[in-house]
Image 1 (cartoon, rainbow, N blue to C red):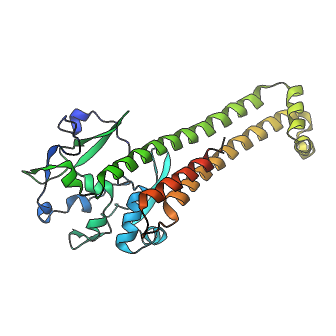
Image 2 (cartoon, helix red, strand yellow):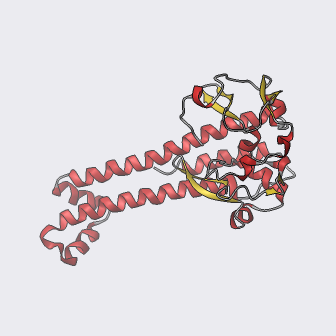
Length: 279
């Protein structure tokens, strides 16, 4: 989830790299599970790697995680994405401890760290005022995350971040182009509109509107009808883009016996190809 607060207000003001030491160590959280018990809304947004790890660790498919209310789909920064369902705390919390700790999502691993993206990738930040544990010890960011092959994971995070930017731009472009076309239809002359209807083979649509009781002003009625259909088609296309991303990048199970990153790269390439076709 994107956040736009002043960094000086939410962090210690420093930017950290993977081998920098940061005061984030909580000594196993000392029995504290406050962050897992809190209603955090839809802020724990899940990546494809998170779903791969969680399905591997829990033995549940994406559909099972969804239907058993471990995760949910939410509108996040203009896109439909999965997130941990946290309205009553995390469902993976059992007896005050995480039941999938070795397979926990990336945001959970980060906390109380965060990421700030830039042209080259991202830096880490230490969020202050978020974790109640006092007197945290110094650990390297690498140690705190505990992710195997962190170099490939960082590359994956950057690819996924850029892809979501592309998806948002695609969704915005579909709507902008549809609105431009709808306004053009509302503004062009009657003769040009009749010619347009002929070119796109909608002369019959004009006649149907005329026969439906709009004979005196059927051109105006057709304008409004066509503009609305253009907008509706755009929303249908937007939904198809989002459904495609969910299906290809999340819902279709990954092979646990094969390398995740190679599978991700292949799916990402195919997903790019599919959603590029939508105008």
